[in-house]
Image 1 (cartoon, rainbow, N blue to C red):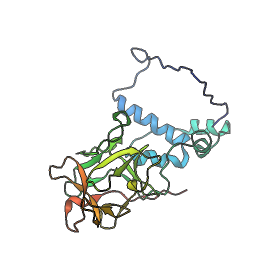
Image 2 (cartoon, helix red, strand yellow):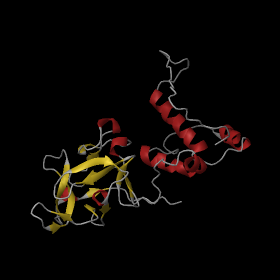
Image 3 (cartoon, one colour):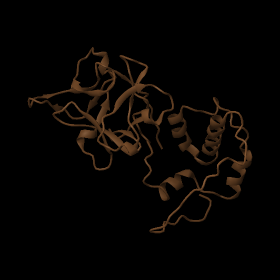
Image 4 (tube, rainbow, N blue to C red):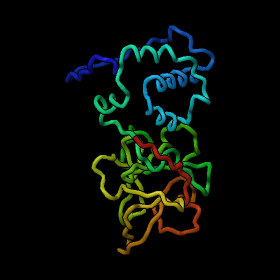
Length: 240
């Protein structure tokens, strides 16, 4: 953003060597210090993109005091740094940014409001079934975006359903077809865009449903008054 260049050298190796202890003091609350530093970076460098960081973490400057950042902003101005939008477009164009998303945040069950949908991290591998866990605000594994295309996405992974089956799995978003397109209805149900084919070959609307033991989700025929098919998901619209 402020000059220089980033080079990718084939077969190169990069390492970060950590000391056994930090040469500086993090204070009594190291977690809060880390959060404050991240928020200061967001406020100085991320421009309008900082709102996505706040949405995902649940943090805002009115909740956490970040101190005076006027010197850092003046430095950025004096160096004539480019915008963060330029950085995303030119340096990191593959970064997923949820502009024009229909819904963002945790997906909690209206049958059990303290329980949220959870997708494990990339290291666990794709093809797994999402689970239901205790809601934890700010937990990345419980943060989902309903994109303008209709994907339920967490970073590079999406939820997909298997036609003719009740199973919902996680898949890499790139290259997924119609089985990864969803709608969050005004009735607070989460349904596939396309009508599903049942095991007996018939077609019927299906909804994401909380399992009876409240540990998982699966696809079942929609029932208007079934609370296990009702979900709370924050409807947000970030445009650019």
